[in-house]
Image 1 (tube, helix red, strand yellow):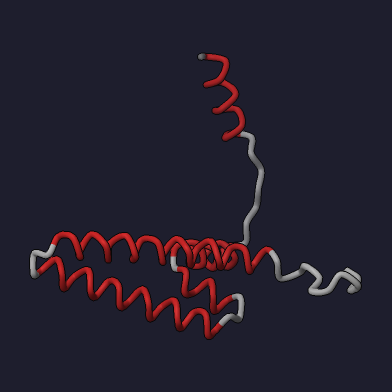
Image 2 (cartoon, rainbow, N blue to C red):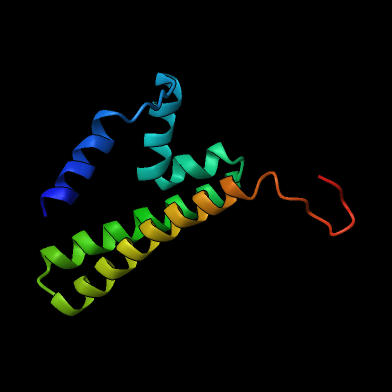
Length: 108
């Protein structure tokens, strides 16, 4: 146990990674706000649709929470969470595939 604790502390203390402050702020926004990630990837239509769906499901979640309809509230809660994580994963994949060639014959 002590060996693993030592390795963990050693790796944290001697980690030497510099990150540009502007890039760090941008990455934070794109990781936790999926719509920003879509716009950063220049997928404007997808960002608008995803943002609209997230807003609608959050509104319906709030509405059914106030009217005490637990079944529908839970359904919209799952939809809200699902759309949120879909947006994060989709923005991440789009960002990582932007330099990938579109055709098999296309050179890097």
